[in-house]
Length: 93
Image (cartoon, rainbow, N blue to C red):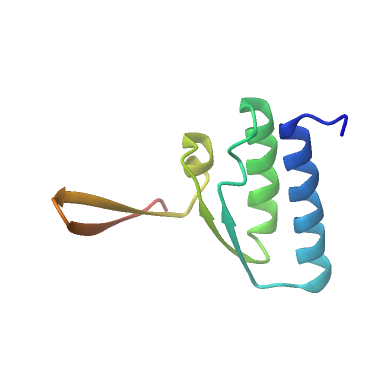
């Protein structure tokens, strides 16, 4: 109860990543887990994300620019015309 939202988020992420490493899970899907983090904690999260990505495939849904910078591939959905969605992909390697 004494932790801020960002600290609670980092604690949950650390627990999740430790569980993944212990269980040897090959895939994780994360949805907006970095939304409550400030810039310095996003940098810490991205370092942890890069480390865990060496052993597992990570799919992360985010709007955070700093998190997108560490990705290998980006996928987005645009709507150029009303009611018609288009998938856009970018390989960052």
